[in-house]
Image (cartoon, rainbow, N blue to C red; front, side, top):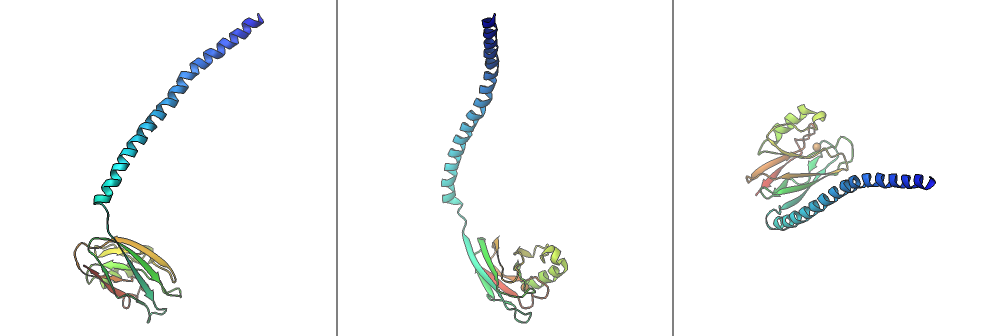
Length: 185
Ligand SMILES: [Cu+2]
């Protein structure tokens, strides 16, 4: 009787395991198989993509640097009054604010030709809440505001049409002394 009970519980265990196993192995096998398929697919497409990128899609990047100098309203200026870039390239601008005291905060806003004053006027109305950058087609690209001693970076695509564009600091009353020419060649 005792053995019968033992056998019975063994049988129950076997049945229990047999019932569980098929479900367990199914749920494990399917994701493994699909992961393998995905891994193979990615390896193939990734390999092909790298080769194509080297041949056709390497975009030229032009690095330029601009400094803001001066520590009073009468002194402030962009150290570089002209910047030169090729047409339709990715430009990586590093903007260094060498000012010391707090009111000497500056940005760089690139504008359509001869629109820097108009953009600066509109920026004053936008104010600090709009980061002193108005929403107008005359704005090509705008950096964040650089506090005294700060360096900020800006990436943008240069205009496709060659010409003399402008850049300006749109912090209130800075545009008089802080503007320059972006020559697109
Ligand atoms: Cu400024």
